[in-house]
Length: 460
Ligand code: GAP
Image (tube, rainbow, N blue to C red):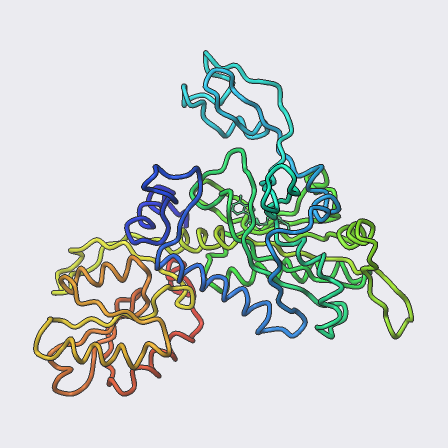
Protein backbone atom coordinates (compact mmCIF):
# COMPACT_ATOMS: atom_id res chain seq x y z
CA UNK A 1 0.00 0.00 0.00
CA UNK A 2 1.49 3.35 -1.02
CA UNK A 3 1.90 5.82 1.81
CA UNK A 4 0.63 9.25 0.92
CA UNK A 5 1.82 11.22 3.91
CA UNK A 6 3.75 14.30 2.88
CA UNK A 7 6.79 15.69 4.66
CA UNK A 8 4.75 18.87 5.31
CA UNK A 9 2.23 16.88 7.36
CA UNK A 10 5.00 15.27 9.38
CA UNK A 11 6.66 18.64 10.01
CA UNK A 12 3.31 20.16 11.04
CA UNK A 13 2.53 17.34 13.48
CA UNK A 14 6.02 17.54 14.96
CA UNK A 15 5.64 21.26 15.56
CA UNK A 16 2.03 21.02 16.78
CA UNK A 17 2.81 18.38 19.35
CA UNK A 18 6.28 19.62 20.23
CA UNK A 19 8.27 16.65 18.91
CA UNK A 20 10.75 18.56 16.75
CA UNK A 21 10.94 22.22 15.79
CA UNK A 22 13.37 24.63 14.13
CA UNK A 23 16.28 25.58 16.33
CA UNK A 24 16.87 29.21 17.45
CA UNK A 25 13.35 30.03 16.31
CA UNK A 26 13.17 33.39 18.10
CA UNK A 27 16.14 34.53 15.99
CA UNK A 28 14.56 33.28 12.78
CA UNK A 29 16.05 29.77 12.93
CA UNK A 30 19.48 28.49 11.93
CA UNK A 31 19.66 26.65 8.61
CA UNK A 32 18.61 23.03 9.04
CA UNK A 33 19.19 22.65 12.75
CA UNK A 34 16.38 21.29 14.85
CA UNK A 35 15.49 21.01 18.52
CA UNK A 36 13.62 18.10 20.03
CA UNK A 37 10.83 18.86 22.50
CA UNK A 38 9.48 16.63 25.28
CA UNK A 39 7.81 13.94 23.13
CA UNK A 40 10.60 14.09 20.55
CA UNK A 41 13.22 13.48 23.24
CA UNK A 42 11.29 10.51 24.66
CA UNK A 43 10.68 9.09 21.18
CA UNK A 44 14.25 9.39 19.89
CA UNK A 45 15.53 8.04 23.21
CA UNK A 46 13.33 4.98 22.71
CA UNK A 47 14.79 4.49 19.21
CA UNK A 48 18.31 4.66 20.67
CA UNK A 49 17.38 2.36 23.55
CA UNK A 50 16.11 -0.23 21.05
CA UNK A 51 19.41 0.00 19.20
CA UNK A 52 21.36 -0.49 22.44
CA UNK A 53 19.07 -3.39 23.32
CA UNK A 54 19.81 -5.08 19.97
CA UNK A 55 23.54 -4.43 20.23
CA UNK A 56 24.24 -4.99 23.94
CA UNK A 57 21.40 -6.66 25.78
CA UNK A 58 20.51 -9.31 23.24
CA UNK A 59 24.14 -10.28 22.44
CA UNK A 60 27.33 -10.79 24.37
CA UNK A 61 29.86 -10.03 21.63
CA UNK A 62 29.49 -6.22 21.55
CA UNK A 63 30.63 -3.61 24.07
CA UNK A 64 29.69 0.07 24.38
CA UNK A 65 31.83 3.17 23.96
CA UNK A 66 31.29 6.92 24.28
CA UNK A 67 34.26 8.68 22.73
CA UNK A 68 34.89 12.45 22.60
CA UNK A 69 33.52 14.57 19.78
CA UNK A 70 36.85 16.42 19.50
CA UNK A 71 39.66 14.09 18.57
CA UNK A 72 43.32 14.51 17.71
CA UNK A 73 43.49 16.10 14.23
CA UNK A 74 45.72 13.25 13.03
CA UNK A 75 42.64 11.02 13.33
CA UNK A 76 41.13 12.77 10.31
CA UNK A 77 44.36 12.63 8.33
CA UNK A 78 44.55 8.88 8.89
CA UNK A 79 40.89 8.27 8.13
CA UNK A 80 41.10 10.20 4.87
CA UNK A 81 38.49 12.78 5.92
CA UNK A 82 40.85 15.74 5.76
CA UNK A 83 41.83 15.03 2.19
CA UNK A 84 38.73 13.38 0.83
CA UNK A 85 35.56 14.09 2.82
CA UNK A 86 34.32 16.54 0.23
CA UNK A 87 31.33 17.25 -1.94
CA UNK A 88 31.58 19.11 -5.21
CA UNK A 89 29.86 22.50 -5.00
CA UNK A 90 29.02 25.35 -7.29
CA UNK A 91 28.08 28.94 -6.48
CA UNK A 92 25.60 31.04 -8.40
CA UNK A 93 27.03 34.49 -9.08
CA UNK A 94 23.51 35.91 -9.48
CA UNK A 95 21.69 34.73 -6.35
CA UNK A 96 24.77 34.02 -4.21
CA UNK A 97 23.49 30.54 -3.25
CA UNK A 98 25.65 27.42 -3.08
CA UNK A 99 24.56 24.03 -4.46
CA UNK A 100 25.87 20.49 -4.62
CA UNK A 101 27.12 20.09 -8.15
CA UNK A 102 26.10 16.41 -8.25
CA UNK A 103 22.52 17.13 -7.02
CA UNK A 104 21.60 20.03 -9.30
CA UNK A 105 18.83 18.14 -11.07
CA UNK A 106 17.05 17.52 -7.69
CA UNK A 107 17.26 21.18 -6.60
CA UNK A 108 15.34 24.35 -7.37
CA UNK A 109 16.72 27.63 -8.63
CA UNK A 110 15.76 30.13 -5.86
CA UNK A 111 14.75 32.72 -8.47
CA UNK A 112 13.00 30.33 -10.87
CA UNK A 113 11.83 27.35 -8.77
CA UNK A 114 10.45 25.44 -11.79
CA UNK A 115 14.05 25.02 -13.01
CA UNK A 116 17.14 23.46 -11.45
CA UNK A 117 19.99 25.84 -10.54
CA UNK A 118 21.88 26.74 -13.68
CA UNK A 119 18.83 26.48 -15.96
CA UNK A 120 17.15 29.75 -14.93
CA UNK A 121 17.43 32.71 -17.30
CA UNK A 122 19.81 34.66 -15.00
CA UNK A 123 21.79 31.74 -13.53
CA UNK A 124 25.55 32.00 -13.64
CA UNK A 125 27.20 29.00 -11.98
CA UNK A 126 30.89 28.76 -11.12
CA UNK A 127 33.00 25.70 -11.94
CA UNK A 128 32.56 22.85 -9.43
CA UNK A 129 34.99 22.94 -6.49
CA UNK A 130 35.57 20.43 -3.71
CA UNK A 131 34.23 21.54 -0.33
CA UNK A 132 35.30 19.75 2.87
CA UNK A 133 32.32 18.89 5.03
CA UNK A 134 34.12 18.92 8.38
CA UNK A 135 33.40 21.78 10.80
CA UNK A 136 36.61 23.38 12.04
CA UNK A 137 37.22 25.01 15.38
CA UNK A 138 40.25 26.02 17.43
CA UNK A 139 41.47 24.28 20.57
CA UNK A 140 42.93 26.51 23.26
CA UNK A 141 42.26 30.06 24.47
CA UNK A 142 44.03 31.95 21.70
CA UNK A 143 42.51 31.58 18.28
CA UNK A 144 45.63 32.35 16.24
CA UNK A 145 48.06 30.07 18.07
CA UNK A 146 45.58 27.30 18.88
CA UNK A 147 45.45 24.02 17.05
CA UNK A 148 42.75 23.46 14.47
CA UNK A 149 40.47 20.62 15.53
CA UNK A 150 37.34 19.23 13.90
CA UNK A 151 33.89 18.30 15.10
CA UNK A 152 33.72 14.61 14.24
CA UNK A 153 31.88 13.88 11.00
CA UNK A 154 31.20 10.27 12.09
CA UNK A 155 31.37 8.39 15.38
CA UNK A 156 33.21 5.47 13.77
CA UNK A 157 36.72 6.88 14.05
CA UNK A 158 36.39 7.23 17.83
CA UNK A 159 35.92 3.46 17.87
CA UNK A 160 38.93 2.66 15.68
CA UNK A 161 41.32 4.84 17.68
CA UNK A 162 40.16 3.06 20.85
CA UNK A 163 40.50 -0.46 19.43
CA UNK A 164 43.56 -1.28 21.55
CA UNK A 165 42.07 0.11 24.77
CA UNK A 166 38.82 -1.76 24.36
CA UNK A 167 40.54 -5.00 23.39
CA UNK A 168 42.51 -4.85 26.64
CA UNK A 169 39.71 -4.16 29.09
CA UNK A 170 36.78 -5.94 27.45
CA UNK A 171 38.36 -9.44 27.34
CA UNK A 172 36.83 -9.94 23.89
CA UNK A 173 38.40 -11.46 20.83
CA UNK A 174 37.33 -11.25 17.19
CA UNK A 175 34.57 -11.58 16.19
CA UNK A 176 33.45 -8.81 18.52
CA UNK A 177 32.00 -5.32 18.15
CA UNK A 178 32.22 -1.84 19.65
CA UNK A 179 29.03 0.23 19.55
CA UNK A 180 28.58 3.93 20.00
CA UNK A 181 25.79 6.50 19.79
CA UNK A 182 26.63 10.16 19.55
CA UNK A 183 26.49 13.45 17.73
CA UNK A 184 28.22 13.95 14.40
CA UNK A 185 28.57 17.13 12.38
CA UNK A 186 28.78 17.71 8.64
CA UNK A 187 28.72 21.06 6.94
CA UNK A 188 26.32 19.73 4.30
CA UNK A 189 26.04 22.02 1.28
CA UNK A 190 22.38 21.26 0.76
CA UNK A 191 20.81 19.97 3.95
CA UNK A 192 17.07 19.60 3.95
CA UNK A 193 13.98 17.47 4.09
CA UNK A 194 13.47 18.15 7.77
CA UNK A 195 15.73 15.95 9.94
CA UNK A 196 16.64 13.68 7.03
CA UNK A 197 19.80 15.66 6.30
CA UNK A 198 21.02 18.15 8.87
CA UNK A 199 24.39 19.56 9.82
CA UNK A 200 24.23 18.23 13.37
CA UNK A 201 22.81 14.76 13.87
CA UNK A 202 23.15 11.60 15.91
CA UNK A 203 24.63 8.38 14.64
CA UNK A 204 24.32 4.83 15.96
CA UNK A 205 27.39 3.00 14.69
CA UNK A 206 28.88 -0.37 15.44
CA UNK A 207 32.25 -1.61 14.24
CA UNK A 208 32.41 -5.41 14.21
CA UNK A 209 36.00 -6.73 14.17
CA UNK A 210 36.38 -10.15 12.56
CA UNK A 211 39.09 -12.54 11.32
CA UNK A 212 39.65 -11.54 7.67
CA UNK A 213 38.32 -14.78 6.19
CA UNK A 214 35.04 -14.39 8.14
CA UNK A 215 34.28 -10.89 6.81
CA UNK A 216 31.96 -11.95 3.94
CA UNK A 217 29.74 -14.05 6.22
CA UNK A 218 29.51 -11.29 8.88
CA UNK A 219 28.65 -8.78 6.18
CA UNK A 220 25.68 -10.98 5.24
CA UNK A 221 24.79 -11.43 8.92
CA UNK A 222 24.65 -7.69 9.64
CA UNK A 223 22.67 -6.82 6.53
CA UNK A 224 20.00 -9.27 7.60
CA UNK A 225 20.11 -8.36 11.31
CA UNK A 226 19.70 -4.67 10.63
CA UNK A 227 16.78 -5.18 8.25
CA UNK A 228 15.10 -7.34 10.89
CA UNK A 229 15.57 -4.63 13.53
CA UNK A 230 13.54 -2.12 11.53
CA UNK A 231 10.84 -4.67 10.72
CA UNK A 232 10.57 -5.84 14.32
CA UNK A 233 10.03 -2.24 15.39
CA UNK A 234 7.15 -1.90 13.01
CA UNK A 235 8.42 -0.50 9.71
CA UNK A 236 6.37 -2.04 6.93
CA UNK A 237 8.58 -4.48 4.98
CA UNK A 238 7.21 -3.21 1.65
CA UNK A 239 8.55 0.25 2.54
CA UNK A 240 12.04 -1.09 3.26
CA UNK A 241 14.66 -2.49 0.93
CA UNK A 242 18.32 -3.38 0.87
CA UNK A 243 20.30 -1.90 -2.01
CA UNK A 244 23.77 -3.19 -2.75
CA UNK A 245 26.16 -0.45 -3.97
CA UNK A 246 27.51 -0.69 -7.50
CA UNK A 247 31.33 -0.94 -7.61
CA UNK A 248 31.65 2.69 -8.79
CA UNK A 249 29.64 3.93 -5.73
CA UNK A 250 31.88 2.28 -3.14
CA UNK A 251 33.89 4.45 -0.75
CA UNK A 252 37.67 4.16 -0.99
CA UNK A 253 37.76 1.98 2.15
CA UNK A 254 34.95 -0.40 1.28
CA UNK A 255 34.90 -3.65 -0.66
CA UNK A 256 31.12 -3.98 -0.28
CA UNK A 257 28.36 -1.68 1.00
CA UNK A 258 24.60 -2.00 1.11
CA UNK A 259 22.10 0.66 2.09
CA UNK A 260 18.96 -0.04 4.03
CA UNK A 261 16.55 2.24 2.19
CA UNK A 262 13.13 3.44 3.32
CA UNK A 263 10.34 4.87 1.20
CA UNK A 264 10.34 8.38 2.68
CA UNK A 265 7.94 11.02 1.30
CA UNK A 266 10.95 12.18 -0.77
CA UNK A 267 11.24 8.69 -2.33
CA UNK A 268 13.51 5.72 -1.58
CA UNK A 269 16.43 7.06 0.48
CA UNK A 270 19.22 5.77 2.68
CA UNK A 271 18.34 4.94 6.26
CA UNK A 272 21.50 3.07 7.19
CA UNK A 273 24.66 1.84 5.50
CA UNK A 274 26.29 -1.54 6.11
CA UNK A 275 29.87 -1.67 4.90
CA UNK A 276 32.70 -4.17 4.70
CA UNK A 277 35.56 -1.77 5.55
CA UNK A 278 38.27 -4.44 5.39
CA UNK A 279 41.40 -3.55 7.41
CA UNK A 280 41.54 0.03 6.07
CA UNK A 281 40.88 1.92 9.32
CA UNK A 282 43.06 -0.07 11.71
CA UNK A 283 45.92 -0.13 9.19
CA UNK A 284 45.71 3.63 8.64
CA UNK A 285 45.59 4.47 12.35
CA UNK A 286 48.47 2.07 13.04
CA UNK A 287 50.54 3.81 10.39
CA UNK A 288 49.71 7.35 11.54
CA UNK A 289 49.99 6.69 15.29
CA UNK A 290 52.83 4.17 15.34
CA UNK A 291 50.71 1.87 17.59
CA UNK A 292 50.17 -1.76 16.65
CA UNK A 293 46.44 -2.21 16.11
CA UNK A 294 46.14 -5.94 15.65
CA UNK A 295 45.04 -9.08 17.41
CA UNK A 296 47.26 -11.93 18.56
CA UNK A 297 45.53 -15.26 18.11
CA UNK A 298 46.70 -17.55 20.95
CA UNK A 299 45.74 -20.68 19.07
CA UNK A 300 47.47 -20.05 15.76
CA UNK A 301 50.18 -17.87 17.38
CA UNK A 302 49.61 -15.33 14.62
CA UNK A 303 49.11 -11.58 14.64
CA UNK A 304 46.51 -10.22 12.27
CA UNK A 305 44.64 -6.97 11.60
CA UNK A 306 40.93 -7.69 11.97
CA UNK A 307 38.55 -6.72 9.20
CA UNK A 308 35.57 -4.56 10.02
CA UNK A 309 31.88 -4.83 9.21
CA UNK A 310 30.07 -1.60 10.03
CA UNK A 311 26.33 -1.04 10.37
CA UNK A 312 26.03 2.78 10.50
CA UNK A 313 22.60 4.24 11.21
CA UNK A 314 21.26 7.72 11.89
CA UNK A 315 19.15 8.16 15.02
CA UNK A 316 17.31 11.19 13.61
CA UNK A 317 16.74 9.56 10.25
CA UNK A 318 15.44 6.38 11.90
CA UNK A 319 13.15 8.48 14.12
CA UNK A 320 11.83 10.21 10.99
CA UNK A 321 11.23 6.87 9.26
CA UNK A 322 9.30 5.51 12.26
CA UNK A 323 7.21 8.72 12.32
CA UNK A 324 6.42 8.56 8.61
CA UNK A 325 5.54 4.89 8.79
CA UNK A 326 3.28 5.39 11.81
CA UNK A 327 1.41 8.48 10.59
CA UNK A 328 -2.21 7.88 9.68
CA UNK A 329 -5.40 9.85 9.21
CA UNK A 330 -8.72 8.10 9.56
CA UNK A 331 -12.39 8.51 10.27
CA UNK A 332 -13.66 6.98 13.49
CA UNK A 333 -16.82 6.92 15.58
CA UNK A 334 -17.33 9.74 18.08
CA UNK A 335 -17.00 8.92 21.81
CA UNK A 336 -20.80 9.19 22.01
CA UNK A 337 -21.10 6.44 19.38
CA UNK A 338 -21.98 8.36 16.19
CA UNK A 339 -20.63 6.33 13.28
CA UNK A 340 -17.66 7.73 11.38
CA UNK A 341 -18.30 11.20 12.73
CA UNK A 342 -14.76 12.12 13.64
CA UNK A 343 -11.40 12.53 11.91
CA UNK A 344 -8.29 11.57 13.76
CA UNK A 345 -4.58 11.81 13.10
CA UNK A 346 -2.81 8.96 14.82
CA UNK A 347 0.74 7.71 15.15
CA UNK A 348 0.54 3.92 14.99
CA UNK A 349 3.95 3.51 16.57
CA UNK A 350 5.37 0.31 17.96
CA UNK A 351 4.42 0.56 21.67
CA UNK A 352 8.11 0.25 22.63
CA UNK A 353 8.85 3.41 20.61
CA UNK A 354 5.84 5.42 21.72
CA UNK A 355 6.96 8.42 23.82
CA UNK A 356 4.15 7.93 26.36
CA UNK A 357 2.86 4.43 27.08
CA UNK A 358 -0.29 5.32 28.96
CA UNK A 359 -2.37 8.43 29.59
CA UNK A 360 -4.69 8.56 32.58
CA UNK A 361 -7.77 10.70 32.03
CA UNK A 362 -10.47 11.53 34.58
CA UNK A 363 -13.75 11.79 32.67
CA UNK A 364 -14.75 14.88 34.68
CA UNK A 365 -12.74 17.17 36.93
CA UNK A 366 -14.89 16.52 40.01
CA UNK A 367 -16.49 13.74 42.11
CA UNK A 368 -13.09 12.47 43.26
CA UNK A 369 -12.12 11.33 39.74
CA UNK A 370 -8.95 13.46 39.46
CA UNK A 371 -7.75 12.10 42.80
CA UNK A 372 -8.17 8.48 41.70
CA UNK A 373 -6.52 9.27 38.36
CA UNK A 374 -3.53 10.81 40.18
CA UNK A 375 -3.31 7.73 42.38
CA UNK A 376 -3.19 5.52 39.25
CA UNK A 377 -0.50 7.71 37.68
CA UNK A 378 1.59 7.45 40.85
CA UNK A 379 1.29 3.65 40.78
CA UNK A 380 2.16 3.33 37.06
CA UNK A 381 4.90 5.88 36.57
CA UNK A 382 7.67 3.75 38.10
CA UNK A 383 6.97 1.09 35.46
CA UNK A 384 6.24 3.06 32.28
CA UNK A 385 6.11 6.61 30.89
CA UNK A 386 2.73 7.83 32.15
CA UNK A 387 0.88 11.08 31.60
CA UNK A 388 -2.03 12.67 33.46
CA UNK A 389 -4.38 14.73 31.32
CA UNK A 390 -7.52 16.43 32.57
CA UNK A 391 -7.69 19.36 30.11
CA UNK A 392 -10.54 19.54 27.58
CA UNK A 393 -13.29 17.14 26.51
CA UNK A 394 -12.55 13.42 26.60
CA UNK A 395 -12.68 13.32 22.78
CA UNK A 396 -10.12 16.09 22.54
CA UNK A 397 -7.83 14.30 24.99
CA UNK A 398 -8.06 11.05 23.02
CA UNK A 399 -7.15 12.96 19.84
CA UNK A 400 -4.13 14.48 21.60
CA UNK A 401 -2.90 11.09 22.78
CA UNK A 402 -3.54 9.56 19.32
CA UNK A 403 -1.39 12.24 17.74
CA UNK A 404 1.56 11.45 19.99
CA UNK A 405 1.04 7.71 19.55
CA UNK A 406 0.09 6.74 23.13
CA UNK A 407 -0.92 3.06 22.94
CA UNK A 408 -3.28 3.10 25.94
CA UNK A 409 -5.66 5.63 27.48
CA UNK A 410 -7.06 4.82 30.91
CA UNK A 411 -10.31 6.59 31.72
CA UNK A 412 -11.52 7.10 35.27
CA UNK A 413 -15.32 7.49 35.36
CA UNK A 414 -18.33 7.26 37.70
CA UNK A 415 -18.12 3.46 37.79
CA UNK A 416 -14.48 3.66 38.94
CA UNK A 417 -15.59 5.24 42.19
CA UNK A 418 -18.01 2.36 42.75
CA UNK A 419 -16.01 -0.74 41.75
CA UNK A 420 -12.34 0.42 41.35
CA UNK A 421 -12.25 -0.47 37.66
CA UNK A 422 -11.22 1.73 34.73
CA UNK A 423 -11.69 1.69 30.98
CA UNK A 424 -8.58 1.01 28.91
CA UNK A 425 -8.82 2.21 25.31
CA UNK A 426 -6.39 0.77 22.80
CA UNK A 427 -5.02 3.23 20.25
CA UNK A 428 -5.11 1.15 17.04
CA UNK A 429 -8.23 -1.03 17.39
CA UNK A 430 -10.07 1.50 19.59
CA UNK A 431 -11.18 -1.55 21.59
CA UNK A 432 -12.12 -0.87 25.22
CA UNK A 433 -11.63 -3.16 28.22
CA UNK A 434 -12.66 -2.77 31.80
CA UNK A 435 -9.69 -3.51 34.10
CA UNK A 436 -9.39 -3.49 37.90
CA UNK A 437 -7.07 -0.74 39.14
CA UNK A 438 -5.11 -3.27 41.20
CA UNK A 439 -4.28 -5.27 38.07
CA UNK A 440 -3.68 -2.33 35.73
CA UNK A 441 0.13 -2.20 35.93
CA UNK A 442 0.55 -5.91 35.18
CA UNK A 443 -2.08 -5.92 32.43
CA UNK A 444 -0.55 -2.93 30.63
CA UNK A 445 3.00 -4.26 31.00
CA UNK A 446 1.89 -7.58 29.46
CA UNK A 447 0.15 -5.83 26.56
CA UNK A 448 3.17 -3.60 25.94
CA UNK A 449 5.44 -6.64 25.81
CA UNK A 450 3.40 -8.41 23.14
CA UNK A 451 4.78 -8.68 19.58
CA UNK A 452 3.38 -5.89 17.42
CA UNK A 453 2.85 -5.45 13.68
CA UNK A 454 1.77 -2.26 12.01
CA UNK A 455 -2.05 -2.20 11.69
CA UNK A 456 -1.41 -0.49 8.34
CA UNK A 457 -0.45 -3.93 7.03
CA UNK A 458 -4.04 -5.08 7.57
CA UNK A 459 -5.15 -8.39 9.17
CA UNK A 460 -2.38 -11.01 9.12
N1 GAP B 1 30.80 5.64 9.43
C1 GAP B 1 30.10 5.54 8.19
C2 GAP B 1 29.17 6.65 7.99
O1 GAP B 1 29.19 7.65 8.67
P1 GAP B 1 27.27 7.45 6.41
O2 GAP B 1 26.47 6.67 5.40
O3 GAP B 1 27.92 8.70 5.97
O4 GAP B 1 28.32 6.41 6.98
C3 GAP B 1 25.65 6.75 8.34
O5 GAP B 1 26.35 7.76 7.67
C4 GAP B 1 24.23 7.17 8.63
O6 GAP B 1 24.23 8.42 9.34
C5 GAP B 1 23.38 7.45 7.39
O7 GAP B 1 22.83 6.25 6.86
C6 GAP B 1 22.30 8.36 7.94
O8 GAP B 1 21.29 7.61 8.59
C7 GAP B 1 23.07 9.16 8.98
N2 GAP B 1 23.47 10.46 8.42
C8 GAP B 1 24.55 10.74 7.64
N3 GAP B 1 24.58 12.04 7.31
C9 GAP B 1 23.49 12.61 7.88
C10 GAP B 1 22.97 13.95 7.92
N4 GAP B 1 23.59 14.97 7.32
N5 GAP B 1 21.81 14.17 8.60
C11 GAP B 1 21.18 13.16 9.23
N6 GAP B 1 21.64 11.89 9.24
C12 GAP B 1 22.77 11.61 8.57
